[in-house]
Image 1 (cartoon, rainbow, N blue to C red):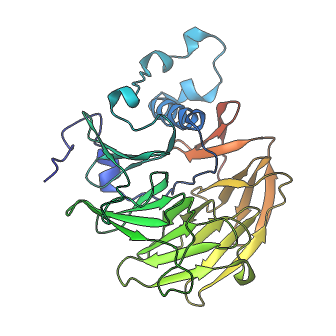
Image 2: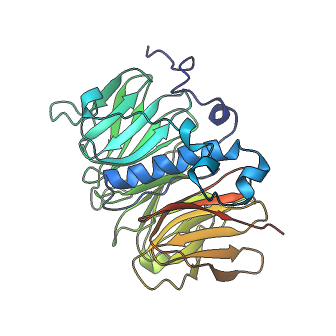
Length: 332
């Protein structure tokens, strides 16, 4: 039995335990340690900013003496010297027990706040990880982890038995629902885990209760790789692909696509504000979409956006290749 890290203040997150995640992580191809650094700075700085008095957040600071939150932001590094298999990180996930799981290009790592345990592919063990390059991690309602790997398809990990189950790509085989290269993973409110794979494989779906699988191709309304997804306030699943925003209809098992007029590269992230608007980021801009009237508009001048995080004070933090800065959203 693996001890719970609940009493470890570095690892355990009480707020996360009490309320489910609504923001689902969107992962990117060719992610590097630099991208991880952006996301870590994004989360830590936003956390301390949210605790400041209102007057400290309203106006941008003009000098170092007006940045009271910066001296309290302490960073701790976790590297191969601490047991990580490699320093290139593709995803970080905290499970319902409080453990931190780290997806790397050379194995999966579990951190309990004190030590790192590494899981790797073992050619002599069919219950080991199918491939060492893990791209994305998500947890189902039963506490199992679902892993997207780049070369080994989908894996699930059961912490009770400490075993991996593999779902490899096998052409013309029932139950084979996604390619070998799987880059993204996210879940909905109906016990489904969704996986994104490069064309021609499209999107794969697995119901973790019934075991039912499905695959959606370009001719079924999916164009490009699924970069991420979110369940909105109405319970609808929205998925961003290369250049489209897609709404899934579980009754008809179909998608409705809304093209986003990006010029270069692809969409990167999606979130929702309290007023119901969906915010979609891309490598060349930020967009707001109103699901009620299906209106899409470009917002501000932002470039190379890689990640977004909405915090409680109504600020949308935007992480780019060049900077991390807050953008105030006026609701209503």
